[in-house]
Image (cartoon, rainbow, N blue to C red; front, side, top):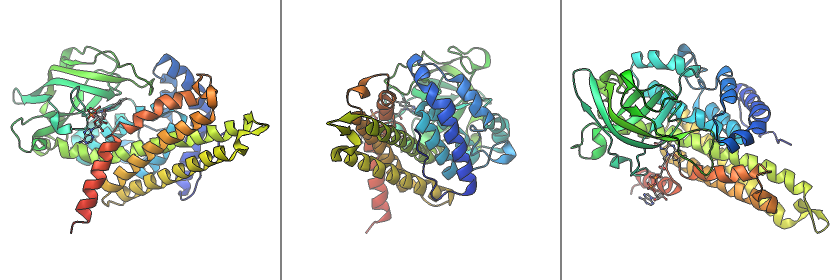
Length: 403
Ligand SMILES: Cc1cc2nc3c(=O)[nH]c(=O)nc-3n(C[C@H](O)[C@H](O)[C@H](O)COP(=O)(O)OP(=O)(O)OC[C@H]3O[C@@H](n4cnc5c(N)ncnc54)[C@H](O)[C@@H]3O)c2cc1C
């Protein structure tokens, strides 16, 4: 049984796209997720179909070969993909952040060079801030880029937890370019670091860009998370996001802007996994009997279902609000933080309630909830932990309501 995701407040175009992606998740993702999760292998056939559906170019303008849709529609698509499996949306998500960075800050040459191939999914993008010794505290990064001749910078250092780290071609990488800058964020630059997709030790023009074996994880399998090691990697100055003149030492501000849309994106994933947990709980609770009746007839179970459904709807509304504000060109930092905080926690809550409703079977790999239970915690961490979201929300509240 698959509940139709409510179609309230969607344009006809959004309804049509969501219906198409919902069906894609039902037919192509959900039946196969268990296999790829178990093997922890990349779901290549699913990704090939996503390319055909144009899902790698949803927000890329039509002039560069994409669909030219807004963040709100993108978030709706991400919810549907994540309802199928959050790893599938993970393959698109950092790619989306990379295309956002190019669209907003890239030079025309950079857009022409990369966006058309990104729109078709021919090349994919990753996004790299975190390092082995820091994640929340982005200003503590240590990876450096130093100009070595007229045309090139040399990058040295290690990055951590890069989603799509191996199979991507482009990695939007934040590095220090002015170690003496105060405050530190004024000395950071975003490089579009190119490499050969799928290659651990790059050679030739990409020599010095190495991708160690993928990190073994609790969940969020199938999509690779890797470390990146830069050891004398020569990156052309023209690959500074926005060009050397405009982009040098602007990386922190660019990446923080991208995190704002990234947070809407993770919120949508929280809604998707919460929605799926609700669907599974509604089904199982009407099938399973205890004390002579379906467990759904016990009030304690109905209360769980009621709390789950309320959280799913509230999370979706917060996510849509944040996306619409951004699309309208209004400030949405506070709202994106709220959406990310609430929806990722709603994802965890709904998955745990669904797990409890399944009793002992929730602990068995025979049931889908077992995968969701391992996948959901990632959303509490990626694009800023719940603690960091609360810090962002608190800070923005005080800025907006200064007395
Ligand atoms: C599967 C996976 C995929 C990821 N993909 C990417 C990616 O593609 N690109 C990328 O750049 N990063 C990625 N990350 C990294 C992720 O963004 C970081 O893990 C996250 O930002 C937290 O950083 P940390 O792990 O270093 O934890 P820390 O920053 O070390 O935090 C540890 C704990 O301390 C808390 N804490 C930290 N500072 C404060 C404070 N000031 N007040 C209160 N509490 C605080 C945190 O909330 C957390 O609970 C990924 C992570 C995972 C697990």
